[in-house]
Amino acid sequence: MRSETANGRAVSRNPVSNKSPMRTKAGKWYADWRDEHGKRHMKACASKKAAQRMSEKKRREVAAKKTRASAPSAKSPKRGPRRGGTNSIAKLRRISRAARVPSNPGS
Image (cartoon, rainbow, N blue to C red; front, side, top):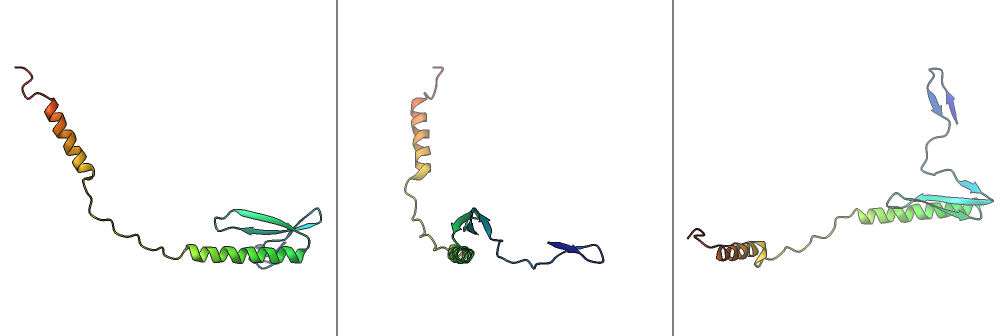
């Protein structure tokens, strides 16, 4: 639903709103919403009013989940000092390699 103004620019008659248009199919009305991950969901309802209520309810639930998810997470405890670790393994490999290789292979 667009109309043109005197300067040739297209203007929408209806203001943009958060609500998506209600969908009907086979005598059912569909509630339409997106979850916290952005995936679209639709659920069939018997009446337009019921579909609007369902859609608003689901959107409120998603908004609540999003606000909870965006809260700062708790800090992990600091790690203690390392015991052994990769350095000690590398040292053992060098020592065992040195023990296997003869110091003077030509004699």
